[in-house]
Image (cartoon, rainbow, N blue to C red; front, side, top):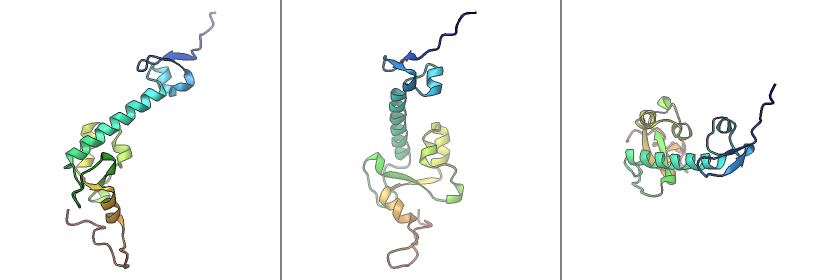
Length: 136
């Protein structure tokens, strides 16, 4: 009975380098996918493109203060919290069509405005009227 050969290295089809098994995610090694480093770079770039597209879809500027800036400064704020099915961490892994369903429940806010809206109480102890936004 012939001995089964155990693979310890593979050729990454992206970077064209031979890498050890521990440099791959388990499923990628088994399925001849990219090495961990190339897979991570792909995920980061895909997420960046998707977020920029989502920002553009929602108008490209903060709905509250009209801020226009770097894509990392924006948040997707759900107008009706009960309808929220996913946060950005989950949304970014979906197809564009699935992402649109969630984006249609949101407005685009800069990080500062998003924090202000989610602040329930103002400095003077009064309730923040924007906490449950009605003017968007």
